[in-house]
Length: 450
Image 1 (cartoon, rainbow, N blue to C red):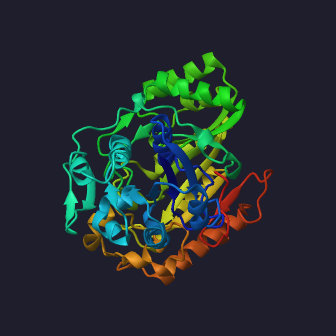
Image 2 (image 1 turned 60 degrees about the horizontal axis):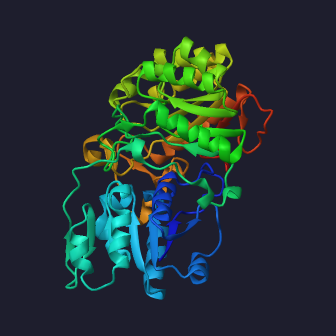
């Protein structure tokens, strides 16, 4: 039986990183190992017509995944496939977990909620066994939503299990057309131990946080080197290990293995320490990314960031002082502060001089605390037809908040751009590999490579 995976995505034209969709890659690997014929179409980077790909491959099952900002294109993909082809359409991901009935109405046969590793292959096996008795077989699989023969929506029992990350197979990157991607990616955890109000990383499917063991991670790194030799790796986890002991231990393991890997990690500012930065540099880390969000203690409290502006500034200074390139992300338009508070990050940037500065507007994400409590914070949620605006680099005037206007957001972002240019930062549209200080805002057409 043939299975085509589709990452149904808008073509963001340089506004997002060129990374292979990791979740799809894991499911495709499990499907391949189960004996099915697998193909992947990543519409974010592969501009072939998806209908032509289906005609050529002739799959029995099309599995679609997408994020909320791509809901418009995804709904068209699902609807057109359902109309044109006699295939089973399975859909998953955070958006589908939150809005399963809506996704069914696009034309999906089954929505898989939560972690797809728990139910995807069992659904395929049920389909393979034939249409007779299919509903009964599906009813025994957890975390599914589908319509029965009478058109009634059925939701199966929620799973009491969660994925043991150590038992997942190493993702077979060769299932992707790697020519589309600039680097390799690894993800070693689910969820995040912190609960910032703007973030949905602890949304459905991930509230029980887990992280792979250091030994399991090391096996994957060794596999990557065996397959691809010397490489650059983006450590896609929100936090590079969840406690200090494991971070330092893993750096020691990397030093002992001496693998030819250069890598980029993400960390909260309050987890950045001199001894860690020194070890990271020693074992091949070439960039530290910090989600700073704001330079205002007032706003940081309002978003439940659980850190301070002083800690953020010290973390950047530590990285820069020790010679590790530092990238920072900042948001404007967060609840909790006026224009003066929204601009306070500029003081930190001017003093600490991070190498890369990404400034974008706050957007409410489905599954986040701010989304679920939007009215309380004066956030006016968009209709589903406008979810495309839930993109950090969209036009700020398309977002509606009671506490700040789109015009004011535009003005604040312009101020950031003007100051960064004044301090010698180069916009991403003009930067090259030799640019030491680079910035991006929604006004640039391209973002960073990673």
